Image (tube, rainbow, N blue to C red):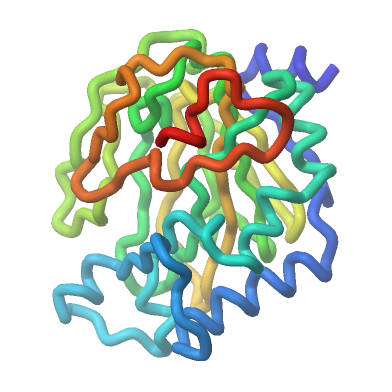
Length: 265
C-alpha cells in the first residue's frame, strides 16, 4: 500500500515515525551548534539566512539567523537520523536495499525573514538515475503548519518532466534555493505535520515551502537516499553547485555499494 500511494502521488506521509527522545536530541544539537557550545563537524555547512548575512535583519538569537545546516551526517548526534532503523525500513520498501544516504540537512525556518523555498524538484541536485530509485525523507521536529511554512507538494508531478531551474524573481534569494517557473499550482497540497511525522517523496516531485508567519522557529530534518545500484550520469566526477558538492555527504547506510560510490567519492 505504501508503494502504491507513493508512486501514484509522488509522496506518502508516515505519522509519528520519530520518537520524542530522538527529536529532543536532534533539536538540542542544532541549538548547541548554533550557540557555539560545540563546533560544527568537519564538512558541515552552517548557512545563514540571506537577509541576516547582508545585515538587513538582526536575529533574536543565533539560531534565528540560520536557515539550514548542510551535511549533518558528519555530526555524531545528527547522524542518528539517517541511521534510524524504522526510517530505513520504510525507505527500503520504496527503493530497495543497498542504500546510500546524501544531502542531509537540518532545516530551520526563522520568522521575520524571507525563508520561502520556491517550488522545485530535487532531482537536479543528484547524479543518480533513474529518478524512481531516489527518495527524499523530511521529518517535522515540531508542529509544522501553513502558518509557519509547511511543505507544499503537487501530487503526480513526479510523472512529468524535470524542469529547468533558476533563482526566483524575489528581492532576497537564499543560497541554492532554486525553483521552477510557469508551473500549474492549482493542485498543490499543504502537508501539515506534528513532531515526528515524516514525509517520503519522489526525487522528481515539485514541492516547496512558504513563509514562517509566526514568532517561533520552524525546525525539520531531511535527507535523501539512492539505491546504490543506480547509474551515475555525472561519470564519477565531483560536480559542484556553487560550492555545494553532493558527493561530500555520501554514506552507505545499508547493504552493499557495488559501484564504490561511497569509497571513491
